[in-house]
Image 1 (cartoon, one colour):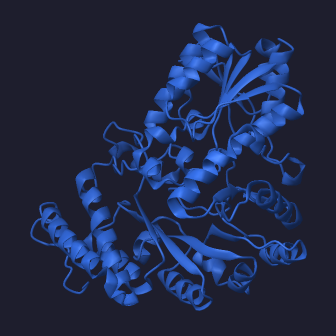
Image 2 (tube, rainbow, N blue to C red):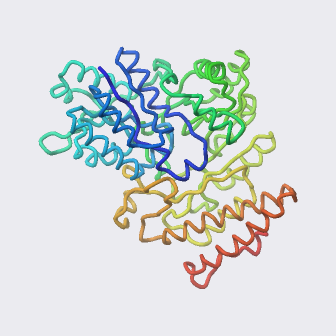
Image 3 (cartoon, rainbow, N blue to C red):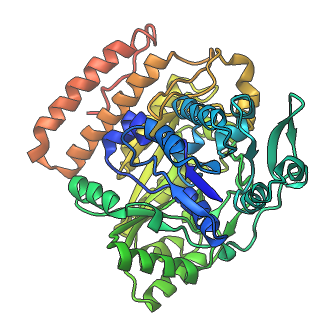
Length: 483
């Protein structure tokens, strides 16, 4: 079959990400393309990450006239898990264009899993849910044999319309041995284009790899529509080999390991470090883990030995009350201790912060600000609690939603709940906390060459405090102890 494949996330429609100039290849889509290639299909790959105009995909549909259109999202990138409405609108547009040409359309994404009606009503023939690769093989084989109309009922992991209602087949069992999957096929994209943007804007080239799938933890706001609460990993030897190929073929300097939880399996990171040394591989990387896991055994030293440069943790809040409400299973004390130990090794530690969770008040916000000031992480990423279907958080607050169910882009930060402050407050809080953090970074480093930035951020903080006071009535966010 002649298959046109792409994903619905377009960086050009996400101003915040476009401005960062840090593009990562659509890893999940490249896995799917590798499978299609293995089965001898003709693959026309459209890289929406580097696209400058989403309408080019429509032009591809019209000029190529493929036998099938596959919208297969990169589920290793958190941006696709956000289910952004701008991207959904484009996917629906592509589906309608395909169907107007009598071309079958298959979709795989978190958003299609959570909101199937939006895609199926546009004409999508089937939505793949759960882990995608094995289901994809069966779906494409069925279309190749022109028997999908009858076969679809016996293919696990599908959602489709039947007599006006959504029919869902049995959930497919997840792969346990990820080593059986082909490597993502980078030949389908222009890696030089990625490299040039990184080098020109940051002075080095970073790309992404995945070593695991799933997360067994139960943070109640975290959406897991595809892999659920499982955890399977690729062998350290296989990962090291992938890294070696990336370095040798594309001159990669740095890696983002996209795993939700990196190195959860006891001893995996140590084996990884040994394997990298055996293959004479030296590369810096950033990863995501939990503070409690960092305090386990020799994990921090093993990360250091394997080349880890920056560890991101889901700190979320400096209030234990909020962490407990989220079912994080971590403590504020663990965040402080993990931060201290990581810094002692010379590695960087960065925090994901989340404001606006149900029950959060001004005191909780102050505790989070205090944690950031005390720990002074290498970087911070601030978001607002985002209720997505399938999460306990969503079930808890769904009656408080104000009609809007999805963010438009990754910088939306709309809490969408009646029970919290307005969207504009969180926009200001986001900028305020960043300004406060930058002031502390400058003063702690004693880099007086950046004194002009100090005053810039100070003025910004005072201005934002005055604006936020309108939302906080007579009690203002104090910055008297912050400078």
